[in-house]
Length: 291
Image (cartoon, rainbow, N blue to C red; front, side, top):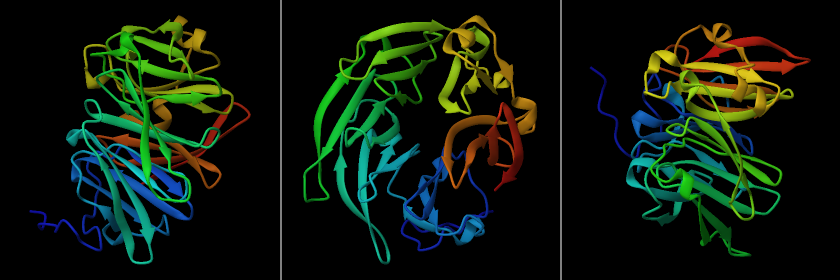
């Protein structure tokens, strides 16, 4: 039996992660979104034992992602349909704002340094909530909500901003949608095989499109995998390379981050829960399991 962990504990207390979704580094602090423990934890040292990590917040239900402009920290409070913001103080994190009714189950959030906007994605309604910081404050205002009708009632776990376009991996459509970042109109649709349709995230890794897959189109988790291809056309045509065997050949790959000169991939449903790896000159190497 695990001990009951108080909501506002200074230290994590858990010696394990429960369905984590993201690991990232903001400023000089590491964060893990510990989804099914309903918390986000942080540490100044990646080597710290999990139970000694600090708790950023437990005022969440199945959080999925965190992002920041360096001052404001945004969290997707997924099962509460909320977006939360925080600021870092000397003794922890202080809540700033709560945005209610952010679509249905907001999953992924991303701060885009090119336009100074926060993007938060409602995973079931095809809506992007775009927030702007009020100059000279730590306050955000909802600038607009962009809608993609093709993605309404379609499960989309993430998005990837690449210059002037955004990529959306859409499960029920069995396709990757390329959308104009300004108009949010669909530019191109790349159908994928049903066996990899339960896509999680597309990442740019060493000149490849690196795709994590949770399930097939029927939500069978035995189809979990991670693959890469040189182009979206290759992903669509089945001309891709499976990398699953490099990461234990089990578990469910989820969000991928890049910091400290390496890539970090969440690995749900099997130990370890995080893999660190390097990717260079078409090679993936120095793979290390963590947590």
